[in-house]
Image (cartoon, rainbow, N blue to C red; front, side, top):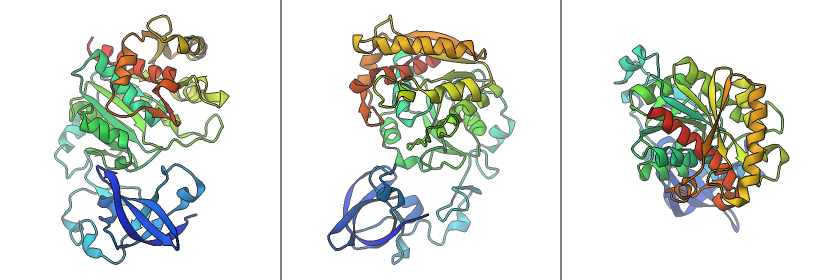
Length: 373
């Protein structure tokens, strides 16, 4: 199940917050880029011997072209928190029973400063919660919120359907650096957020009562898993997240996955992922924002948006818990062009899939309107 390699660090490469990237010699004439999480394995240096997991790299899967550093076996002084684990508060274990399970202090942990707040919290006080399928939608959703309400506090709740370490996301690193996110909260087996939570429920309660967020956005980390079946995709959790929001007294907002350019028919127009997650998994009342093709849409995407409107009407007709909300797209394209991170979904940029990013942005715009009314 795991493909191992051993190598020696040749050089340090540009990384980002929470991530060190190195070039590793793994054999005669063979060098691979490898990613290390210092909080898990320590900080590698040139000359270190490293153990690598190259399973996904050799299959060409979703590691972004990196091997993963598993250990620095010869330099224990570089290991994180060496000899100090007993002094570290918290007892939440993430990535449980894997070789790299990590212990963290949970926002809902009895040892933490926020435990009393979470012990008493049981309601989101009407906070809008946007949930959507792909991590790549996150900056577009936040752009929509900020275009409508520039001072809104947005909390990002990362679920565990994709990457487990939040540090893997360069998108989140860029949004945090630009001040676009008030806080990040990692739920379930995901870890590395400003706050750690056992469940999406406590993550949402923390967003409202600890972060004082106006809007929460729930989406898995990078690395969506799909199988070309109706139920076998990690984005199913977006429907479950909105069920949690509804149960807790939030205002659920379903962020549609849309594409004008996806080569796969099942994802063109309104993706079948959204149909399943929001039409079948979601069972509580929720708003379904749809871009209004008649208001401010570029000519090149109007046909796609009109198709999505029809598909959304069909979806709502068979799912009475959904309320269709047509949202204008005026001024959203300039807002999307002004994001502090590069917009990219399945390898397509903004100009290649305008409809997809507009669909995410109108969910953010609608949530911001709910937060201010």
